[in-house]
Amino acid sequence: MPRELTERDLEAALAGGAVLAAGGGGWAEHGRILGTAAIHAGRPMLWHPDEIADDAVIATAAAIGAPGDQTAWEMQAADYLRAILLLQEALGRPVEGLIIGQNGMSSTVNAWFPAAVMGFKVVDAVGDIRAHPTGDMGSLGMHASGEPTIQTGAGGNRAEGRYMELVLRGETAKISPVLRSAGHMAGGFIASCRNPVPNARVKSHAAVGGISYALALGEAILKARPEGGRAVLRAICDHTRGAILAEGEAVRETLLYTPEAFDIGRFRIAGLELHLMNEWMAVERGGARIASFPDVITTLDAETGAPVSAGRIRAAQTLAVLHIPSAEVPLAPALLDPALYAICEERLGIELVRHLPAR
Image 1 (cartoon, rainbow, N blue to C red):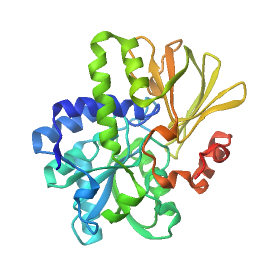
Image 2 (image 1 turned 30 degrees about the vertical axis):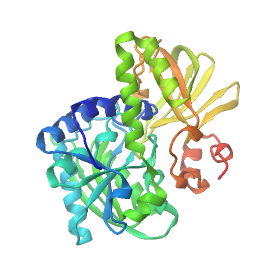
Image 3 (image 1 turned 90 degrees about the vertical axis):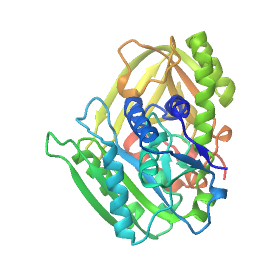
Image 4 (image 1 turned 60 degrees about the horizontal axis):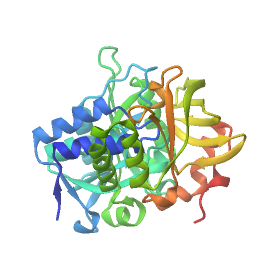
């Protein structure tokens, strides 16, 4: 049976999604605005893919870009609605449900507001259980299919005249970078609706249950918070079967925002080297890889247990580095395709394909 998403679920989604944000994944403040608007606008309902007809059209509601402190981004709830309306118009038929491309500080609730307002289903599936840097990583394997698709975008910084709308048609591997460039031109962030597919593809290619996973993790965090930050860290590790790799002061070595809407950087924490491409992609110690995408890698405030995005790490802040092996989370099959990683390896200057889990 579908589950109504409530204010308690919103807090759980933000808490669990922030861990799965892996150092990126949007802003919790933005997610709270979206989720609160959804709950007051209607009744967002969470549906398992098995409860939906295989031929129902499901699209991905996502926010594209790198909304860090280095950009003048603006995102309104209405932008998500506009992106979906543009997609339906281009598609020529209605959408029945929405998935999200990834979990994150705000992205876990990306589908709630348009679903509540327009009567869509929030589908309990995600393109990738954790946040990732490229649109192809959450595209349900369409990056390698050669199938034409539709991607739309709406939003931008109004005060600077950056608001824009766009409708793209073509192979996702070709048009996803265009949408990301639009995010940069809009101020670092843009709402999108993309890749409409039959629900049968969602069932076979998504990380099914990915929203429920974030909600359950968030509930464990909410229950532990009254006992303090150390209790939160224990609860996260116990629930996810993850581990704290190290704890210490964070040192930013590099952090650069690029016109592709990527944050590229490298940080050091207690002898660990963390590589960032919008999200944490790899952890090394003494040149040896000890965690690598699609593992979940997250930085947590050692005192409060709260996840800290890379862009908000303060000088000399004490952080704990959390590692959840990919074997412990629902994993979308497409993430094991080496073709996804060429741009990441080039931008970061490290190997990722060699460290992928076996298919």
